[in-house]
Image 1: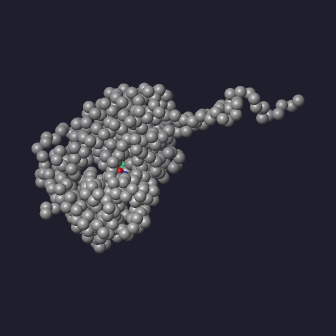
Image 2: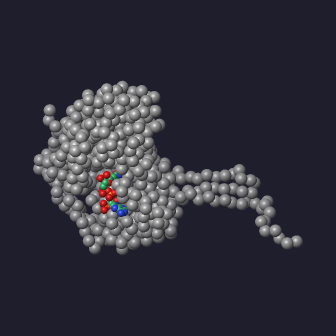
Length: 506
Ligand code: NDP
């Protein structure tokens, strides 16, 4: 049996280097410095982007503040805001190909996946447009004949949006259209490794007629750009996706001005597989959950918890299926798994695997970097680690690579305990043909999303987010809109039936 299926470098021509600038108050601006993004797969410069500093941040935050306060967007009728968002969705769809191409070259993800993510993101914009027109509050008509109260929902204000490199355009689209639907104005900072689709969105927002200053894009590093977006007093809310460590830092910094913070962080997501499950479908989903986006995915199904009776046969099946997954040139439509985002990240993945080996686990498949013919060595082998015990780092820490840890259980209670014995609580899955088993699991497991007999299905309607150290707040769905809304109670006296508080003399 061959260990894996490799796709060598294809003949597809690469595009010219893309130049990205800051977009502040409706104006494209060069930075004082630039950084080049070298494609993880092809090792060539794909984009050259401005590197922002504090002055760019202050200009962007000031523009967003002014745009919010003068009501050019926040006080538009929701119908008008929705019309712009719908136009953005159409323009994203019209630009799927160039956006997917640059996303592939900057991130290393396969072109077919990038196309799916960009096209799928258009649907998030459409859904947010629909939600914009449903913002509603409460009214209280039973407070007495002279009183009426309403509870209004208002946009929270200026929102800082900080996004990572693993799903650059998708994650941006989980946040920005919902903030805009609510009536907020925004400052956006993409990862400096994958800035291009965010900058391309700036071009789309102009074409769609978004007023200047409503969205501002500052390119650059977490320090200083992201840090100031978190600290500045004119920012009302920060929404962040990335590592738990930076999420905690953001939460600490934002607390100085008591900003609202929404965090979508890491995961160590378990799939529990019972002997009565459809084991073929489960094995396919485990392989998908492990290798999708080279495992650089907060929702990666990076640990499976197998019933002892099926552990050996099921593991063998996953190993066998892994051999058919196509790893290689992200530009080839036949490729399912592409490159690792940076050499440093590749080294971190390998260190996790080697540490597991040293701790006594068995690497039964892969375990090491991979060289793809015609491309570099910034790839990692499909890797399966068995004999993992709950105390090992590989069972507890986010590896963020194509690495699966295998643990075993005997009873439902034991499986749930293993799942919940984690700092994270992003997602979890259960595989069984018995609805009682699935429901019992779903109710006991600590996770923001529970999949039963499937893995990683998502819809704009279905909210997403984590428990415990996987984050706080929710994205997409109705709750995703609510995150960007502030609540105000308006209490009205509509008659003069009650006497004054001050007793007048005489
Ligand atoms: P980070 O959390 O460092 O980066 C995510 C974003 O935050 C980037 O835009 C980054 O900027 C920015 N950032 C960094 N420092 C600060 C700061 N002090 N204030 C504000 N923003 C900041 O993730 P990494 O890229 O370093 O990845 C490390 C690990 O994080 C991965 O191995 C993985 O475990 C996890 N991760 C989880 C993700 C998820 O989807 N939940 C996504 C990405 C990573 P820049 O990098 O441009 O400097």
